[in-house]
Image (cartoon, rainbow, N blue to C red):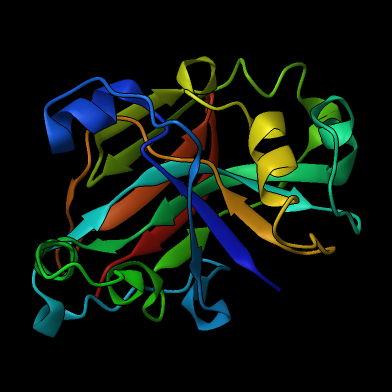
Length: 205
């Protein structure tokens, strides 16, 4: 199983981190190790030795068939479910690595950094680019997103990734986070919603 993720795919998030509403020339792709996966409501143990750990709430898509060089017009055939997930980011570590011109996989791919909720069949979704989602921490909404605001649509991303990687059944795609990222702390309770449906719930320890 491979975990792909997209950086800088919502303009307002780009502004909060970089001060500009930029759109990259191509999708920004990074990967997470399979040991990053955290599911079934298991707790997230905050690695305090890594400094500030930010939540990045995202729509996660599950790949359902083998594919390589997939045309965008056929990309919708290659995923069967989606959910809300968290791309945890070690922000201090990421900043340090970026400043040194080094890869920042450690800041993104550490154990437990890829949380996923309960899957919703794509058959229940009218339009994957017309979905609202949000994250609550301790009962307060801290991040909200709308997939129509994506700079690169899901089908575009799948077509792009498949130029370089063979997609396989069970691979996951984190599609980018909207504005509102922020730190988590031990004892925080996180709940992720797809529309009004709660699909994600876990505690930080």
